[in-house]
Each structure stands twice: as structure tokens, then as C-alpha cells.
Length: 379
Image 1 (cartoon, helix red, strand yellow):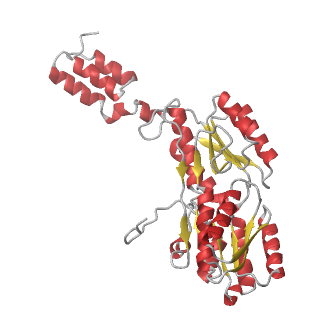
Image 2 (cartoon, rainbow, N blue to C red):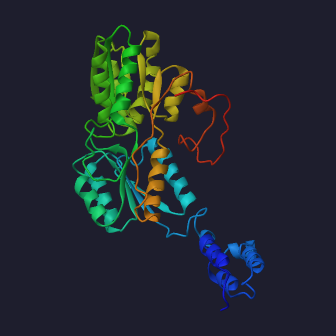
Image 3 (cartoon, rainbow, N blue to C red):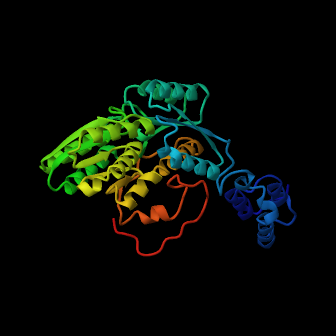
């Protein structure tokens, strides 16, 4: 091979030119001159040769080609409609990055089934795991086993108890659950101006994706100093059970002035029950969490005063992104705790959610670009 102009060799290394293009460039005649070097470099960067760069060899964007990594999501209520946008988020991230995911766990919030699913993912050598840590003790050893097996683990939607994740997961992606419950409690106190009896429904008491919310709500109501008699009631993990439980409780407690919930299914059921018995005309205030289509419709109709958005789509998209970057960087880009937020949605702000069916809220499978107008509200 003839002597090669150093400028060309440096550029070849910088631009990642490989294979035939590299050999053609470095073995070409006349590369000892600067003019020839420039010409050869332009030729090497032509469209015909760009197909040989690592980015075009199968990677996403300018990233190098990677294996089709598989990430496993361990969920506590796998068929609950709340997690439809979460699955869309994971699906979209995988399509963007060229990886895949599996959705598994328990349909009815049974922790042993979730632990078994997590252990199965470790045995199958998953490339990464996202777990809803609804029990800080049960997940400690399985997550440790995954990390010992060089499998990165993040938590999503639930992260153990307040100030104690109970495991060495690398990061948490989701809402600050206690803080969101505290904000709900403050809203309850502000709406129940004359005090009275209120009930807060919780699908699965003790489970750490929602127990911190009910705890926060109680603390906020107590701190308000209002004469509110707040009772929490278990409603069950499946929507039909939640609806029948809430309906029966409301029928048996005709003096209620406030009806609230801390999970998606129970909030939807509260809206249906308030509408069924026309409780808004009796001065009852009601609200809860998440953006189930029936919940949004109840807000528009005036049967619910508010709901709280925690962006479930991001709770699927971001774990995939963070696990993928961890794998790509050899662990140098570590997952980071990410709060997916807290946003009150009421009758004055619900229209944009109802006007368009989207993957982001789980109401459509269609991919689309959504345009908005007007100033962005200040945080």
C-alpha cells in the first residue's frame, strides 16, 4: 500500500468508514497529495459508500447495529386498561430502537405470580427487566438475582414503599405516589367546604402502587383541619368487582359528601356510580386518578370533578429507552429516576383528551401527529 496522507487516514477513522470503502480509499493511487486526498474522501462519503457505515448496517439513526434485545415488563394487573398506553409506549420505543418486549406478570395483583414471572425472565436471560415493585420485600431477592446475572432492572409505576424501594433496582420511572395522593387530599379538602363524610376507594390495600396515594390523601385531609370524616375502602383488582363494591357502598351510605379513588378502575367506577344515582345534584364531590375513556367522559358530563394524569405511556416508553441505552453503553449510561408527573384534569381542561383518540392515552392504536395551538400553560 502506498503512503497515505495523514489527513485522509484521520478522517476515515473519525467518520467510521469501513469495509470496501476504507480499502478503496486507503489503497487508492495518488493519495500523497492534499488534492487527491480531498477527492478520495468525498468519494468515500458518497451515497454508494455510506451504506457500509455502522449506522446504516442495521442500527437506529446514527447508532451502531445492535442485537434485537428483549426487555421483560412484569406487571401486577396485566389486563387492566390503565396499562394499555404503557404497552403502546413500550411498543413504540421498541419500534424506534429495534428491540422487543414481553408483557407478563399477574392479572389479579398476585405478588407470587409476579415474582415467578421475574424469575422466569432471569432464567431466560432477558436483556433487561422493568418491574412494578408493588411489594418491597418480595422483589428484593429476585431483583438481586437479576443484577447478579448482569441483567439491568428498573422499576416502573410502583417503587416499593415511600423512601424505601426495598431493592437495588437501578432507577424508578413513574409518578411520586405519596405526593400525588397528598395533592388529591388537598383537592378533596378544598372541594368539601362544609366537611362531612368522604370515602376513598383503593383496589388493593397495601399494594405499593396505590397505598402511598391513600396515605398521602389521609395526611393532607388531616393537615387541612377540615371536619372531614375520611374512610378508605378496598374495591378489588378487577373492574366489575370495583363497580359492584362501590355501588353497594354508596347505596349503604346515603350521607356521603365526597367519593374518591386512588386507582384507574375505581375512579371509573366512581364516575359511573355518581351518574347512576345523580349524586352531583345532591352536592357530592368526586374524583380520582388516570385517564380511562369512561373517566374522561364522566368529567365532561360533570359526574367527576377531576382526575389526575400520571402519563402511563411514558411508563412504558422510558424504561425501554433507559434499558436500551444501558445495554448500548455497556452500563455507562445508567438509568435515571424519572417522575412522570402529576396533572389535574377537570371539566375546563378535559376537551383535548376527548377530541382526539390517541395511543398516548390508550384510546386508539393509530399512529399520528397531533398539532396544538395557543400558548403553553405555565407550570
